[in-house]
Amino acid sequence: MELKTKITATDGKQEIFIEREFDIPLNLLFKAYTDAEIICQWMGTNVLKLENKQHGGYQFETRNKNGDVVFKAHGSIHDIIPDQMIIRTFQMQNTPFPAQIEFLTFEKIRDDKSKIAIQTIYKSLEIRDQMLKLPFAQGINMAHNRLEEIILLSI
Image (tube, rainbow, N blue to C red; front, top):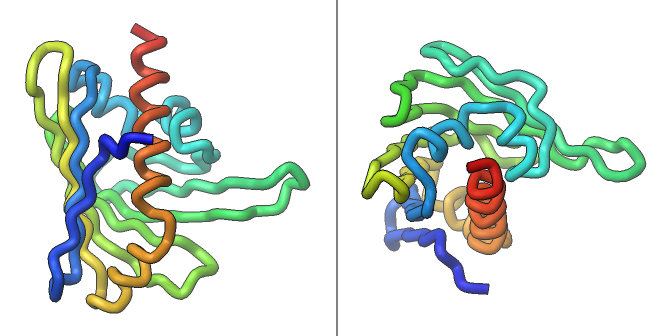
């Protein structure tokens, strides 16, 4: 599988950068990050709460076939400007990882092409490195591929 979503982690820094170009319009890329129904589809999780506003919040939950919770995450939305940016925290529950802060920037390339750039800052370099040991790159690429497929099917 070609990894279209690029992840950059510079030695000695407690941040990562994620970039991906999509063959979809900017407004639909932004909608894929702010519409609960679409998030459920491409992330494969349930959206329990999603308040797309300054000082809003969100909560995601994934259950296995037996109904057991296997993933739960939440965060606060610090700022949001439609079709431009989202600043939010992200924290996985029941893990040793503390909250991280994410700066999502959305950019129009052409009418039918857009880009997301995400800067994620971790509490420490050690935590960032632990996250990168997880199958992080493959997971975000699979999710972004689904995002693009879902949006293209809806156009």
